[in-house]
Image 1 (cartoon, rainbow, N blue to C red):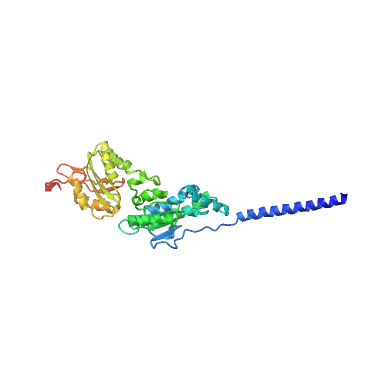
Image 2 (spheres, rainbow, N blue to C red; image 1 turned 45 degrees about the horizontal axis):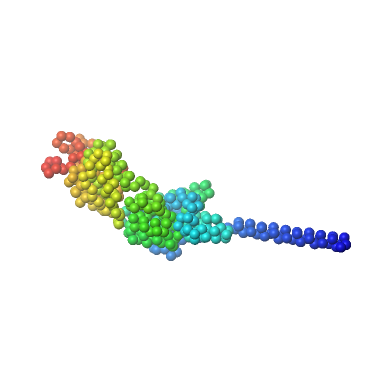
Length: 381
């Protein structure tokens, strides 16, 4: 082969190599550019939701809530970064992993998974609340507080710490356990939130949460079952821990020898654990003389208080719910006789808060109500 032919072949090969190099670099550039394109992420909407549903991204979302919305709004923010990373295993299993892989392949973030409420720029949390009836005050203030915290988290903490924002989907279940269960099922199947921040009746949803592996973080409204469910993460001590401690504190501070309990209850909650927990407080010395229950929504405590005082306990543990507690305090005042010579004393509620009750005068000395109960003689009342 002549030298001129060799020269032509070299030039052709050089040209072909250059063309292939240009094509390869162009392809790589296109791929990288495609990966940097902004991804449009679905927002938390309620287009097909029930009339008593809502979504929240800030404090301007209106009124209402309680344990559920407060917990969901607040804890959604706190868990936005870490919870999203663990999302594929939370409740989706293999399908969740496949969705995440598909999202990554499509140019989204690696753990993008709308099936469990995880998006590239936010996560979804959910819950139920009560906005009507005697306990509506808790719901209204709780939701406002939760959304206020959510606004702070989304505008201040998330940008600073490079975390995803949090969005809240909530429903008003009117403190109806059946509605609570229905809305929790909707939050799981339709809204597809990552976790629950609380509901008004954990008792009604405990079995469903365990069956579907749907996690919940909550405090107020927790029933005894909540501490035995592996998918409910309580943020408060159990009744088995709290109730005996209250008895211990009352014994150490006031030296009581006996006590009685007016226990407020939520709908459809089994209170056997509460009864046992209060009874176990006897190990600290005082004797439990009586235990009676009152609905958390009650506004009249006359029957319960009149029964309690018949056993003449030295100390009474009052209900937690504000309406029921105030009703019991009104009854207590009927059996007190304030005088100028008597200083007011404090009676502790179950949660450790204090309410002032006037002391009453007996023949010998001034003693606080709860220490001396009315006898059959008119002069002692």
